[in-house]
Length: 158
Image (cartoon, rainbow, N blue to C red; front, side, top):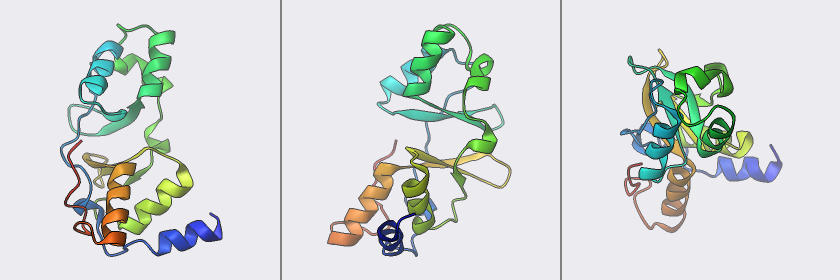
């Protein structure tokens, strides 16, 4: 990470815990959904991606609009997400945090990993929430300008 990025991340409000700014009510994709149903979920809720979560709440992967474009082209719209999991990010490659992580930790991940969202899980890999770039940007503006609560409480649900 460049020196300027490190300085910016260090200036972020470090005491804020992720659980105060994350979105807890997360729209998610189930493995039983078809590619078409996953596309309809994202487009109807105007979100750009969602975690793939099994019946026990465990995160299996994440699926973005870009992933769905590729799946629609390569597998068709009627294939199940479960049959396409091999073409999505594996759990080992997902960028995740615990809800007790700090704003600064998340900010550094967004700056260095170039992700659109960070999945928040518990120690068993179960979905707890999601943190988007817009959650981070809201906190930066609120803490910089005093234009809102520094804990991100003005953050709208996803």
